[in-house]
Length: 400
Image (cartoon, rainbow, N blue to C red):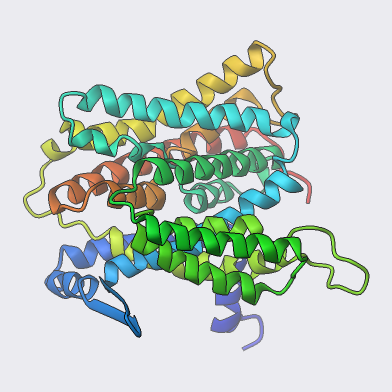
């Protein structure tokens, strides 16, 4: 019928929306919670516990499906994160100190204050303190999705600042995972991973622009990391460091290998890997859980760390840094909008859940982590959105 879009074109139009990735994340997380609190909960647990075995000769990797998602698919996510970080550092918004200083200071504050709040509430419990890094993370897809729901009145400076902040935040999360969440190191496996890294360096120095050799070495490094005790997702970041981004020579394609791989991965990560991760990790059962569970120090430390710690750390440190002349506030970014973005950065969601899965494996802590992350992220999303919505109502639409 004339005037009506086909279902295929409607779906295509939806996937083009900036907010689409965040919306799908919310939907898959909600579906996981519904299933976990329904008669299908047993099937959900059985599915995630399904043993998956991969064997090549004497090499055997046997893990439940949940760990294949958290160790395997998330390595691809961190490969994309690494590509984004390298691009921004080399040619993007973080390529000069003038551009990177404000989001850099803010990201440090946005990691330190949530960790401090969590520590103050859990200082009496040395086991709980393993989770200090859980509220330090920002879910870039979710935060950008909420921001883009505000429509054309959102200044470009606001989006650029949030993106730069989240990228530096991701870099901080990578360092935290590498330093604080490794155990039982196998130096033989680390040595083999080191050989793989030398191979990546050689490919880069030789000017190899085909992606296949880098990715094959990346799989080798991933297996070595998995066996070494270093978290396997760091293999993704390692590969990203060596993917070439230099301008092409005459006769080569205009797009660099890094940009090509980034564009290839983005839809798969946004609409596949992250929703799968959210579905696998968000299924918390509320059976036997009361409001009192949320005010226990562990869950409360995560929730307040995300909701209060992020906005205090980002806005407070950023305001001080600007006032004492360490950096300048970008043109078009008002203090009110700056505060709103500080609240949106408290949406930890998938990144916080991921760090939580590294810190604790027992069911009791896993449930408390999900409660705290959901509460802090939801408060940050709702209050941040309403604050920016109120501000944007007074702004004219931004010209296209």
